[in-house]
Amino acid sequence: MDIHRSFAQVAIFAEGQIQQELRVELTNERFLTFARTLEKADVVVIEATGNSAAVEKLLRPFVTKVAIANPRLVRAIAFARVKTDKIDAGILARLYASGFLPEVWAPDDDTLHRRRLISERMAVLDQMVRLKSRVHAILHGNLLPKYDGDLFGKSGREWLAELPVPPDERRILERLLIDLERVVGQLRELDINLARQALDDPRARRLMTIPGISTIVATTVLASIGDIARFPTAEKLACYFGLTPTTRQSGDHPPRHGRISKQGNASARKMLVEAAWSAKKAPGPLRAFFTRVQKKAGAPAAAVATARKLAILIWHLLSEGTEYLFARPAFTAMKLRRAALKAGAPREYGHAGTAHDYWIKEIRQREAEYVEQAERVYERMVEAWKTAGPVGTG
Image (cartoon, rainbow, N blue to C red):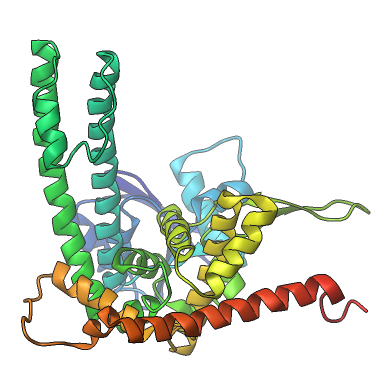
């Protein structure tokens, strides 16, 4: 099926050739009428598009499989000078029949729900950035100095209200601030929903034992991954996030490694890089790794390398069902408690839970000493590499 906005071109392939071609309207009732004409042993092939998830969900009960093709790879494999809807549908059928169809994973309903929330949050964040940029543009256009503090906090808004700007720009500024307050409220509501999802998911709580991974990072990563079993190795997961370097090799020349591919899930990759910057501040092996790469290649490269390290850790934690080896229990409990408060949990005055241990100086220092010891062990191991070289090199 070659899917479009309002219709799908269908090519029915059997016994090595196209048996029938027809067009089906993509309205719910008409498409269900077509789906009921299919047999349970049939396989339907579609391309990944904006409405392919809805098509897959409607077809799923009527056929044995709905294969979703990667449109970029299909175009690379089946390049044609003459391109029509009928030809595209036939190409999809023939590629699947020959075993050459590059498929993508069809997410389940829960993963789709998570992805919609993450996409909505990213859109709201982009809208917030645009509004703030327009406010800064007004200040810049009127040669006004930068505010020393949070421009969009209470004191910053009071400072903005007293600025000497023309009346027309004053009205624009007031409207931008009203829109910004509305968008901030939308972001707060989305973060509450994401925090509730993370707290109800044992996989997310497991990931939050890693320094730098918050409820937002954990939910974004899980929405991108779906079922961890579809990644046979940790390297496959890192590649899916676009955090592995590109490689070029031809003839007798040795392979050359370049920048990361950036061909995976952009939202999850961005979240992992942000988590890497946060992990830099926490004692432990991750900070030692960040520092080692930073000395050699700079801080941005260290953040990307640490993000890849986080992807490797995530694969092991999800595949093996374990927590991070160098987790700090009191710090993790405090992080989970803050997430619970954000999700709307009541405050328990007079009751000291496990999260309270983080504020006890002795417990906090004991946990810090444990992970700092692991950090020093990593540093000594790196020094041993520099002296003797990797094992097996002779």
